Structure formats: structure tokens, C-alpha cells
Amino acid sequence: MRRTRSQEKILSFLDRLNREISAQELYLELRTARQGLGLATVYRSLEALKLGGLVQVRTLANGESLYSCAKKDQHHVTCVNCGRSLPLDCCPVRELERQLQESHNFKVYYHTLEFFGLCDRCHNPSLG
Image (cartoon, rainbow, N blue to C red; front, side):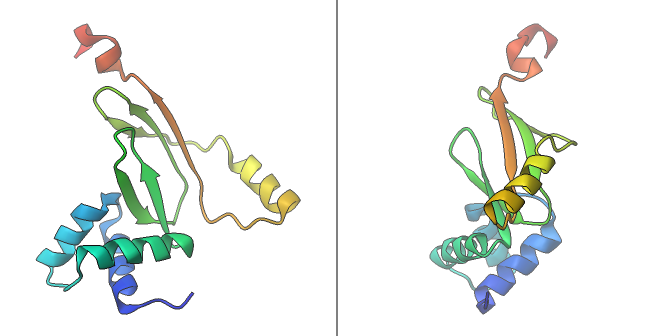
């Protein structure tokens, strides 16, 4: 995939950031760093990088999308009440990914796994 300068700037920033970020936050961070990218350019670049397998996106229960470099799989438990999202340390679907690649001749860039429910604070308010 041939990348534009805008895509290179975004990819470099995401790599240094080493965490998930929304497109709006990314735009504001790049604007603060005087990178000269418009919001529409940020969205277009993120979409192109996603389609190229270089950026992954995770959509929260509230509909917000978070972007990060596609370096590793992401797994979370997310509370539908307060929005708290906690990463999981293990990958319960790695073998399934390998099987899909082999049986379907399908190149997997990354995968996400998300469980939605109530966190301990929202499920048992007396604990918080």
C-alpha cells in the first residue's frame, strides 16, 4: 500500500502514542503539534490505513470509534452503563484465527473481541 504524507504522519503519531485514540482526539493532538491536517483528512487517512491493515478500530458501546496501530490483537470487557473498558490479557481465539487463515485462504490483519455487560461498580453499587 502506498501511503500519503498525511497517512504517514498519522501512523507515526499512533505508533508513538501506543494507545487507542478517537479521530477527534487525534485531530486535536495533530493540530496542537502543528501537523496541518484537517479533520476530514484525518478521517479519510484513518479509513485508508484501516483498509490497508495498518490501523485497527474498536467501537465502544456508545458508538465512539477508537484507533490504534494494528500491532496486536485487542480484547476487552466493556461496561454498557458507565463505559469503563478493561483490556483482557489472554487471547481465546488465536487458534481460530489460524484455522480461518488456512481453511479460507484469508489474510487476517488483526481481530478484536469485546464482551459487553456491567462492571463490578455498576452491577453492585455498594462496592463502589
